[in-house]
Amino acid sequence: MLTDEELSDSVVEEVETTDPQGYIRTVRIRHFFEFESLPTLKRIEEHTIYNPLETLTEVVYLSKKFFPHLEIFDSDGKKLIFHSKLEDYDNSQDDPVEESEEGDQDEFFPITIEFPEGRSLFTRQFRTLTFTYLEDIDFEKDIPVVKVPLGPVPHVYLHVKKLTQFKTDIGYLIESSNGQTFSVFNLDKYEREHVTLESTESYSRFSTSKEISNCNLLIGFKYGLHKWDKYWFNSGIVIGILALIINCFLIIIGLKANLTGIIAIAGIANTYLILTKGWLFMKDMDRFTSYTKIYLTLIFLIFFEIVIAIIVSMFDFPFVLNTYLIVDQHMQMNITL
Image (cartoon, rainbow, N blue to C red):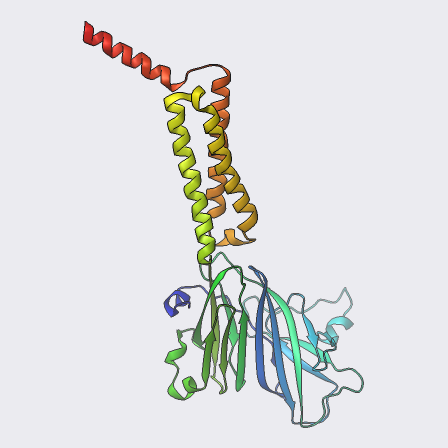
């Protein structure tokens, strides 16, 4: 599991979720994270709301950020219509649109969600709205981090589905309102008793049944390769290096006599490297490993070695061996004199 120290060292970008206006209550939020690819996270948020007032035909959520590919679904699974303030659409193109001052972190952007006819939110009724959208994960950081607000909701549940092709370590930290971070285990005793953490090879879960006020949950992701993948990839590196060394030795002791063996060794090594890269190398693994660069370098060097050996043998140039013979004869003559 990702350690608290590793996660604390990561730089965190602010990622806000939706938050409803005060006339309805959010009693539970469930977050589901599923990676469509390594850098693309599909986020699903289930907001269970309660209406203590009169019947509503629409609700307004306040957001601090834009949600790419946002879709909103009702509890019956039907897609809901949503839009920003009607005033934004009533303005003509010539009318200036007021913009918030740059850096204003308290600015909210309303999302109006309309309920279809016959599906109004009645008084004292619960309703679950599901938000789905995509988020790009920044892998320029050693440990990418996603932020999830914990309040002011009494029940928060988070389920992260791991990418099975990679070894994934997930860690959690709590961020207070003043920006300080600390371990989940450093919550006060009452809050800690209501927090549950669970992690397996396929998923990671966090849940709290009591509100953790004025805090955010930081989720950090650290990726690596499974043990057997490393065995295959490291074997390819060893085979490639051995092929280079053996072929260099064969060239030195006799290029023409060993040309067939040189080509055979190089062909076997390059075949292993190319097949392993095409068969086992996974999309996006270059974001956290350097195996591709190493493999391409070995393939190029082995291929270059074959080309040089063939060209030299075609011109019937004895290459290194004659050099040693000339040096040896010169030494013998000096000894005789």
